[in-house]
Length: 229
Length: 241
Image (cartoon, rainbow over all chains, first blue to last red; front, side):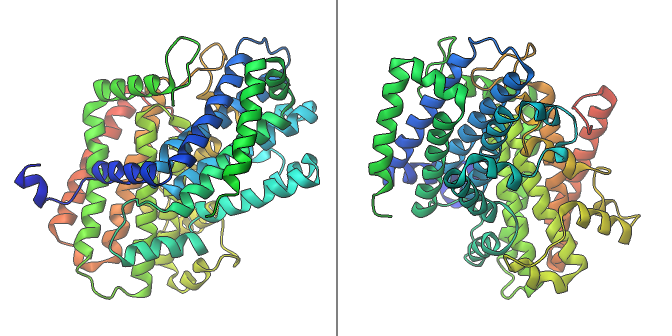
């Protein structure tokens, strides 16, 4: 490091690298769980690409799970860098994609609502998640509410940023609780999507290797979820 | 992420390739994006000298700081080809800016903003109210009507939000791909939001006005305006729909 580099404040990129190294050193297990979940999701969707979508509903549903995967990968990229609110916002979008996909699969006649240009004409999320059944519906709403708290400039999210501002640090930082909690929601969302969305569940069931990976991820998830915070 | 994609590459290979292309074709634009964000951070460092910001100033710092992190993370994702996700995060940054601008006009609302459950106007309502209160103020209604709604199409499930995952034939893409128009759309929104955040900071902290920081803000705003004019002349970007 040159004298000039020692004197100047670190760049954002340098801070992000430092945060990332700390996250991977302190919680490699959470990182590995998310990576395994996204790999499995990616492989399952990769197999869909070879299927021919025959109806408008099928096409839109496939697009949605692809959108869900991209949002989760985006969140996975941001988590180790310490951008928790930002990762939460993308996971929230992924949950919306999952919900919308499940809904149109059940109500194909509603598909057109997602193809028109005005996004705000799609049914309200609280109406759609009731269709998931009581247990899944509670899970979806609980996670969604938690992620909304992170994303909007209100109450708790503001209090967290204000605490950073008072410390004079605006840059990202490592927070073990947030890193674990958000990693946990990503893996849960993938497991849920693969178990609940019929065409993905079918793809997993028809492939021995995907079925094995799915069972293995479920087992690892049970153990990982129980670890002390 | 080591997963093999159908054409033998991995997600990380794709991200690296997109990153390279973004710098290869848009190096000046990437430097400008870096300058805008770094300048925001420099503004914060200058404000460290402010010992006791008042309540409204502290909230402004909080909101601008939150927005800066949304913009920075969006920029990271856009560079790697996650354009839809980047646009979605740019919307959050805009929402933070909007709340800060609202508080400048209505400081008595600071208490409500800090409460989780209190009623709070929707971003569209805030924008409309601000535009009505100050019809000649360009900051009150940035980029014409509907910017927030336009960005919302990338955040909530819609044909726009999933389009990045599809190629021109409607087939699922395997990993991120370089898309010139999407990147330019993102840069347009990111530049604009960063410029608005600079102004909000200067409006809230008199010590920043007439400073070197403020003069640099003006230089950057001029560069952004020149870039936007070139883009408009060339018919680049996706524009608002």
